[in-house]
Amino acid sequence: MIRFFRDRPWIWIVFAFVVLITGWVFLLRLAGEKRPESVEIKTITQQEQHDEP
Image 1 (cartoon, rainbow, N blue to C red):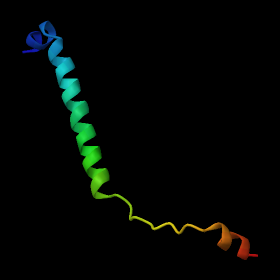
Image 2: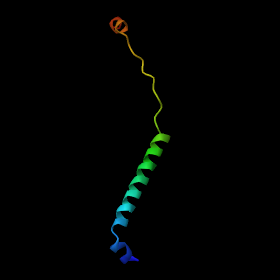
Image 3: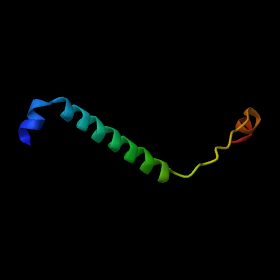
Image 4: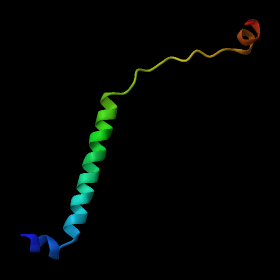
């Protein structure tokens, strides 16, 4: 069994890419589920800016 993997190093590369892609998918899904709330930003006009002390 070990000789099978030793003779075919491309299997390790494919396995590494599968692990990498799986990790990215997991992190992106987790970030999408736990995204922060949207905050509305109030814009201040130039007139309002001059009126404030």
